[in-house]
Image (cartoon, rainbow, N blue to C red; front, top):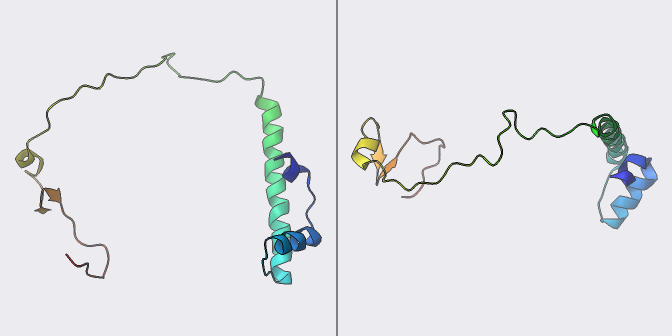
Length: 108
């Protein structure tokens, strides 16, 4: 990240990158990329400033002071399928079905 934050981008940098990666870029594209990379550089600099302001703060692990509060996994029996599908409008082969989302018909 240091390299990007400290770099100054110009058309020559973009030409070099395009040559290395065999990219065909128009002059318009090159100018656009210079502007985008400059904006990105400024955005990354804001993280550097933020890090300076927050580096002395202690991390917050949990607002309630809990530590390793995992629940125990207990295997239990599942619901009967007749109860699961009791209020379902449409089912097929033990699954819920909904109206199609696409206009194409899929072979069944």
